[in-house]
Image 1 (cartoon, rainbow, N blue to C red):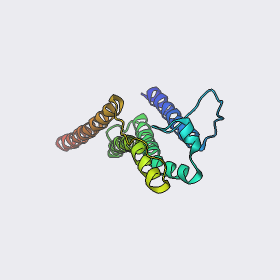
Image 2 (image 1 turned 30 degrees about the vertical axis):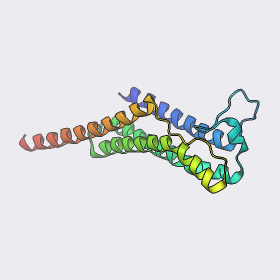
Image 3 (image 1 turned 135 degrees about the vertical axis):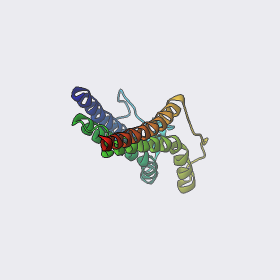
Image 4 (image 1 turned 180 degrees about the horizontal axis):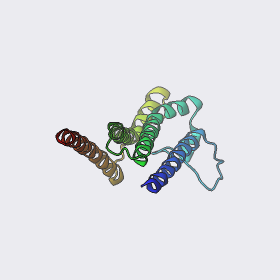
Length: 174
């Protein structure tokens, strides 16, 4: 179990680093126009990203940041959960709380990332007079599956609480 937890912890660190890199690379424009890899915000082309002024870019960052922060918080709580499991505290209240917080933060991050392109369009249109683009919200099977998995984690945490309650009740009879 310790090896599995260590592997997943390493993958969590890699996931967080990649997500932060993509966010910074997309909004900072640090990649040269001729680079082999181009990164842009969801729903925008690289050219549209480069055409944004400083205020527009700051507004875009402000709209996109909650999804990244919620995801990073969720990954942090998942790391705390794995550390608890690694030391053998699988059904402790804090471990269950970490799982619930991870599920909630991931759910929130997913919802934020779904509405972010539409909200960004509204902010850029209303606040900066950017020419009207189509307003769209994209929900694919990946997002729907992630929402379902987050809901399933809430069911799992309820089962963990019930299992803990029954174990404590059984200890009283012994």
